[in-house]
Length: 384
Image (tube, rainbow, N blue to C red):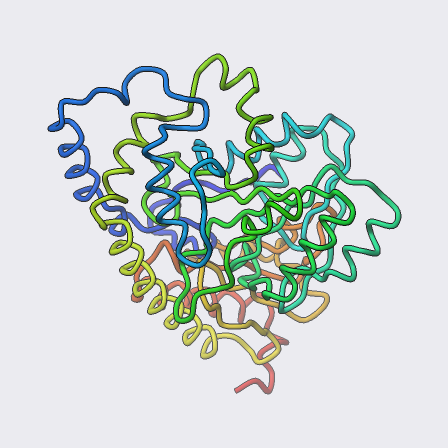
């Protein structure tokens, strides 16, 4: 895969594939005020090397923030440089090249790159409209002993589905029975549009080996490079004993102190509420425009949170092969084959509503529809 995603789209290009917030949603003023509050205290405890798990006060406030549905204790938390760094560290400490891991089909395609960097063999586990299928997971475990299962249970990337509470319990039971570590990437959990999803899988840490990964990238700003791991204190001991943390101490004590001020003064909760409102409206616009512009043979389920819409085209359509034609119309996307270790989902397409405002999303879909009519005229015959 040579054409991995850009952080920015070319000038005049509406890149509907980019899964990141628009510049206008990044709270620069909020972070500036938090920084000023921090330095006004004349307490420079955040400037030396920090404790391996992160500053105790920071973890205490973070635990309070995360205890929205179930209680989270500070000794169950460790500060990270975000989910990508956490995934890389977990691979370093819990796997060896040649090990097998399980991933959902489909799954986050840059996680696949991290796993590939570590020389891991990836086995896809089927999913449906309710997330990972526990029965399929049990069948796979009859024939292999993977190092861990990687799952995205909330507003999945790319499919936008959420693992139901019943399936969460089933996955936890299977994990406990087989001693299968579960790495739960929960970066979108707080970005629900209406009703909140089930609680974090981290709540099962006393029943099974689960590591719940969270990040401020989607609820504050990606450039902070700050997140957390929620797991058992015993698992954290193994992580914090690593050479990386023994050498450098806890990650990002300076940034975590700034974010701590945002959590303490209530600004984070208010900002997340604003994001939910903005993304709810953008998702509604994107889905409405797609219904008007696409033929009936292209299907999708409107998301209930997160960043993404997962389009399914008729069998035989190769979305990756469409990209050059689509790009000529000033719009882009990510093809479904990116999201599978075996290049499945060729007839799928991931779009995101996070990067652009409503008018830009509408224009992007207009361009996409125009490109598809040129490339796939047969899909439009007799449609609307």
